[in-house]
Length: 105
Image (cartoon, rainbow, N blue to C red; front, side, top):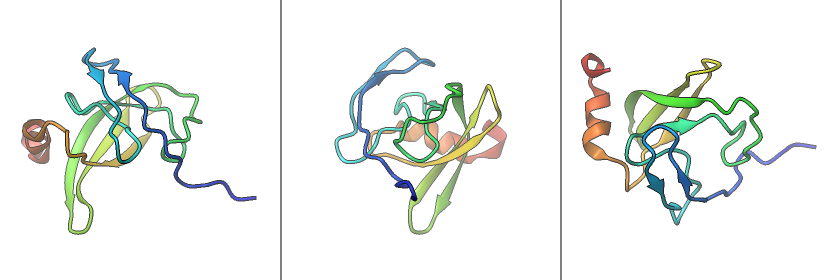
């Protein structure tokens, strides 16, 4: 039996990096803080919350995909794993643009 690759899981949370309250996204699964762009290593497949690592994931780079727009790569501070997440409409655009420059990382 094959599992679903995406689980809708749009919950708000308190960011463990910056401490701000992050509201639900409202149209997809929330996977990172829009204020500092940090994430948490909790998913194996998007939204499933099945990963036991639980480490903070910092935004290590941002690239532009011609179809999907900005893609944020998060790297786990505990296990070193990486995940790619799409930019969301409420993300801090100034921080996102800063991360597109490799000299600012």
